[in-house]
Image (cartoon, rainbow, N blue to C red; front, side, top):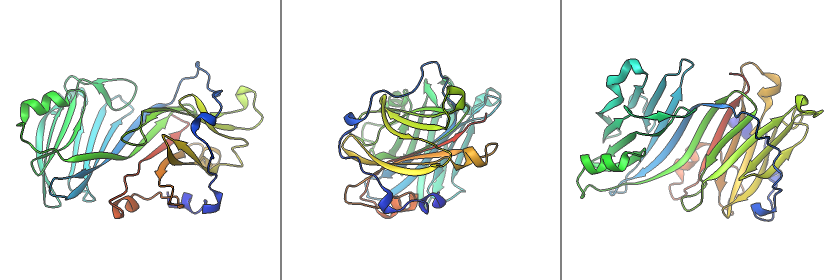
Length: 300
């Protein structure tokens, strides 16, 4: 991502002067188009224990070409403290259990049950599962619709609950040039529907057109995308400044192996910089910004 930063200057940020209601509701997305398929999704969570100590948990759900599902959980920057689970039917015995590992002098205990998990088109289960991560005997991270029941059965009412917040998410997609996802940019905000579409010659357009909409309202349109393959614009969502950056270079110059990248990143109105690196989040612990990175490949 560092090469993207070099392409943007602070003066290139175009801050909108009104809320999202200003944007056109005529989002150019046909209901007949089939969105691309999500192959992997990664969420990074910041955990704050009752002692004040913090840690970061990265949860990755993935799907391979044969339909097998996978789950990987990383703790901090230590690659040795990695939990991996293949939820393919051949490994049914691994779909439910628990494991204890050590990470940065923290005792980590993971409980999971994916034996009744139901999946849609993406790699992450939609219901019928839970993943529970205990950090130093505190409830650190709870995922899944069955999580509350699992906590009640396994833990005491006096078990302390750490503060957990999702600070970033990455999605890897492949298929068409229509990408659909959801995002909540702040803890008090609502969940928004995001659509990204690249229209081409087969739709009667002379030049490729990139359109991004939030809740059916178009927030940006980039004409002649083959020449404007990199850029950024600042929009308002839930009263927050959100930097929207795109890099579609590989779509035109590396069409077989490359993928376009779209980044949504919240920032304070007092901050004029475009922050892209996760290290910046760790250095400034008082800030609770959120980022969504979409890596979109046109080929399956």
